[in-house]
Amino acid sequence: TIEKLLKKNIIQSGLLKIFRDGNGILEYSATHHYILQSGKHSDRFIRTGNVLEHGSRIDFIAMSLLQFVKPSLKAIYCDTSSISSLAYAIIKLKLALSSDRNNLQLPYIDSFKSYDGLDEKKFSFTHKDECLVLISASTSGGLSGGLVEKRGIPENCIIIVYYLNKNKKIKGKILCDLSQSKEYKPFNISDENDCKLCKDQSVPIKITGEQFIPEELTISQIEFDLRHLPNWFKPFIS
Image (cartoon, rainbow, N blue to C red; front, side):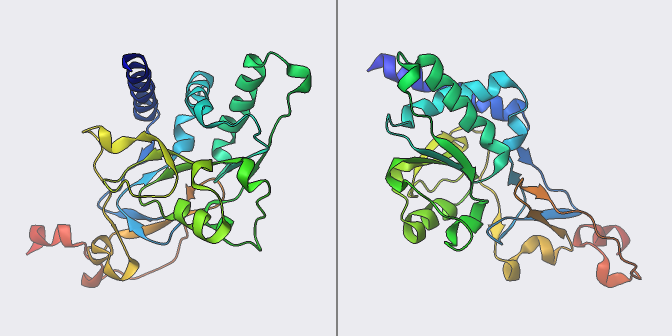
């Protein structure tokens, strides 16, 4: 219906503006690029935690997620604690909208630390059929696919908050598809052995930790020679 289409467009426009204003993408430069949690190399990295700085943004995204919340919801799992504020905001909205707060059973919240959650020895999912799994962002659908195939999480329980890829044949549901906006292009992602950026002497920076932040700098003494010359600089001295 027109009403549903209008509601969907309003939500998508709001999610895009929140992402844009919150600088949700970490850009690369001529000197460095990123190693994603999957181990692949990329020229950019999406960090949804960056856009969750203001309560109004958190509430808007949480409101957008309510459509996926079942009445029997027992648990909310986040791929990183940096988006746990969304889970708590969902609970706040459930309480505000409930007509019987005294008998409302609230879900518990936990973080499965991204790809660590694919290992049953590192994380245990309970109430698999009555949970909501929030993936902060994805450019391949690899994590959601792994959760379905290796951990048995139902597809309709997995929500990717921000997704950027032309391939839509992935496991789980997408809240905001960044590729619908002309300003966001798919990332250049490759395996370590086939990374063009590495071949151009760009330094790979690993995204580490439960908060998805670039690894700390390590300082070591080296002697520079022509081998370390970035490819982009060679035309200036040839």
